[in-house]
Length: 90
Picture (tube, rainbow, N blue to C red):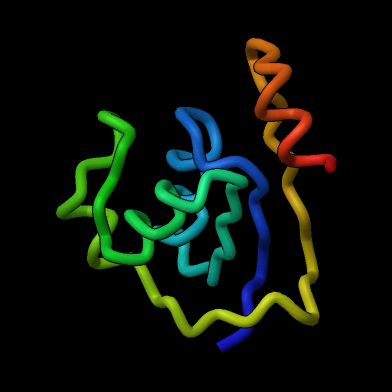
């Protein structure tokens, strides 16, 4: 299964946005630089209160491939975490 849209940043903006796309029938690739967050999402465990784990679990399909994306949404950080930026762009 190939994604229709990719969202960079699985925080309190990216996660609900990914959920909205998925509930609208889109295949979503959600990326984040924090491995523990990605691992949790792949298990259907949410770290965002607005997206309960039960709802996330039914939307997760870990077999999505990254190639052939048709759209890309970039979620901008609302506060700058310089350590995170160094990790993301190293």
